[in-house]
Image (cartoon, rainbow, N blue to C red; front, side, top):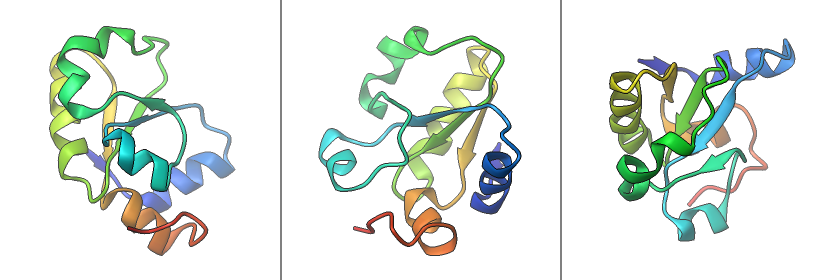
Length: 103
């Protein structure tokens, strides 16, 4: 259900296709982002059908990985290939890219 940041970084190096899904609030996204689709968690149940069904995994992220884990469970239940980024954008910044601002 989760994927560690180093594995996602490997996927990027290998050019494996996937989509990032950011489920944080708008104000959090203004501070830092990994890019991708943005649907805040509180809107996900109403908007999840906007997500692509193109066979690419969804890597769902939030600040520390709690909200993204909830979103991943919901998406899997609804037929999506989704994985939660363990540790969220914060761990990504610590382990992979220190240029991504922490907050």
